[in-house]
Image (cartoon, rainbow, N blue to C red; front, side, top):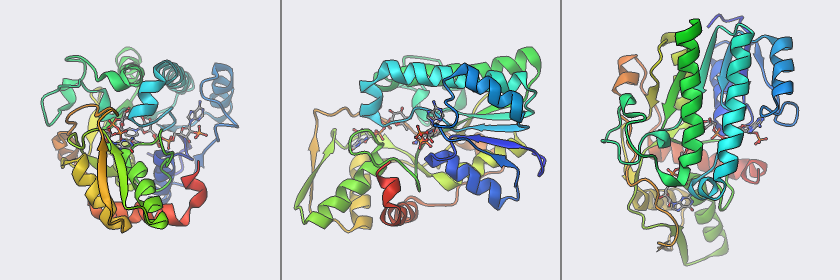
Length: 313
Ligand SMILES: NC(=O)C1=CN([C@@H]2O[C@H](COP(=O)(O)OP(=O)(O)OC[C@H]3O[C@@H](n4cnc5c(N)ncnc54)[C@H](OP(=O)(O)O)[C@@H]3O)[C@@H](O)[C@H]2O)C=CC1
Ligand SMILES: C[C@H]1O[C@H](OP(=O)(O)OP(=O)(O)OC[C@H]2O[C@@H](n3cnc4c(=O)[nH]c(N)nc43)[C@H](O)[C@@H]2O)[C@@H](O)[C@@H](O)C1=O
């Protein structure tokens, strides 16, 4: 990316978008444009058309989406499909119509088949059935990924996509029921510690395996790909390391300083049993993550403590 090029980061107030803005600034990019959801609703085609026609960004990072954890996804299948499908099509299409040179679309490891061989390679996409708890989100995300590929094939654009594993870090969503597991645990254990509770209950059985990437590493990887990758196939972004949800709860409790008992509620969904990315393509391109999980949880807990407004968004 040209250092003076105009870069639009969609979703800059979210966890990923804000980390991408930090990474761009660290790397000397200064011509960054942003709009809040209130200023520009990306599901509104007329608004997106007007914005792109006026601003004509050279580069786009598409980090705006309707996002949520396992329960939020499974309770609002229709909304997750509609909002994400419309938003992606509007942004990618207007980027192309207005000659945007390069665009990065964010997929998610949860859009690979539920029982894909582990660790999951990029070429396992669309090879078997999806996970039911996030089927709607996955179908929308797969469409966005494919639309980038089809524009490249039909019109010669250079629109790429990446496939992040579960992410965590500053500016996460700490909603008690709609967030992802890691922010949910930080909040639950913090509140239990403050209130002197002797037990907390977490969801499912604790047996599913998950992989977690610190969001600033993901953002550095996104900027790296925009400068070092072109191609129709997506690129996995993770650590290649996994742990059980039970092990995760113990680690978060240790960082937060909660010493009570941890119980399980098996009436809540476990979701995909295992979701580990094969990161050999990313590493072959020359990128490696920096932040190990315990350190990343410490940094995230600091952010939670010092940004109470974020914790309530
Ligand atoms: N979090 C994770 O673990 C993972 C995330 N990803 C991907 O990363 C991307 C960003 O996720 P994340 O940062 O976690 O999510 P957040 O919810 O933190 O951020 C999403 C941002 O998008 C904005 N947004 C949503 N809908 C609209 C809209 N209609 N118009 C304008 N802005 C909108 C939100 O604004 P507002 O809050 O005001 O609605 C928010 O700022 C997504 O594509 C997601 O799929 C991929 C893998 C894992
Ligand atoms: C990133 C990805 O995130 C989602 O997939 P997921 O990995 O299943 O997401 P999750 O973080 O919500 O849960 C991970 C595991 O953790 C367990 N768990 C325990 N206790 C809590 C808890 O308190 N909250 C939550 N949310 N989960 C909990 C929970 O039961 C599950 O076994 C997708 O919808 C998908 O669309 C997507 O993009």
